[in-house]
Length: 242
Ligand code: C5P
Image 1: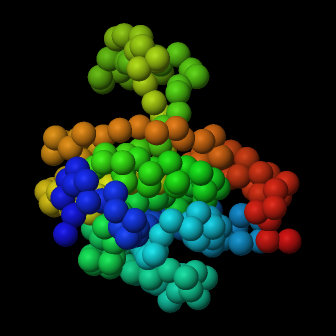
Image 2: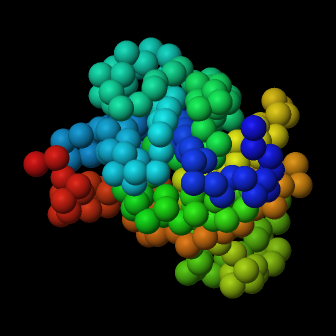
């Protein structure tokens, strides 16, 4: 049993499980199939994502969470992974993944199927930081744009600016997000907890979250434009299935 911030997590035998929630509809992409099943130059986004996790060589267990009607298809596509059905919200799908890992891992990474090009080095940095004693670790990048906070309820085509945020103190957070097993269980113990990422749930429980360097290649495929960029990268790199 690991504990939040337990130094035993640093021991050589601490095992790593990766959970990949891919049970969303991905409607923003405008494709007919859920995002993870969209083609990325000859292979689905899901296949490329799982291959990236396997290449990173950090995990003993990989769990993929997909819509219930696509479980059989996903099992055929990614035989290296355990495949389970997801839930209505992202956090329900992550919880299904945590249950499927069971006690097989001391460190849990929650990755995003929509970030299939994440380099192995990012996985390595996240795992190393958890092993060094941080209970919750996210990869992040500095923000290039100037960011404005707007007044709530702004409408009618123009939005009133409330403040300009100090971007030097901001990080655009990616995945995989890494946790000691107990930190992730604590973060998800509140079943009413909805958040756009798991670190957000951990923060709410008072668990300290640390940032390590992310990578531009860990980009999230959300829009048709993102898909075009990702396909272009795969077509021009050794990641290509051809
Ligand atoms: O909605 P968003 O893009 O933030 O979703 C992030 C990831 O969570 C996606 O890979 C999506 O497939 C997954 N998800 C899920 N179960 C849901 C909703 C989203 O596994 N019910």
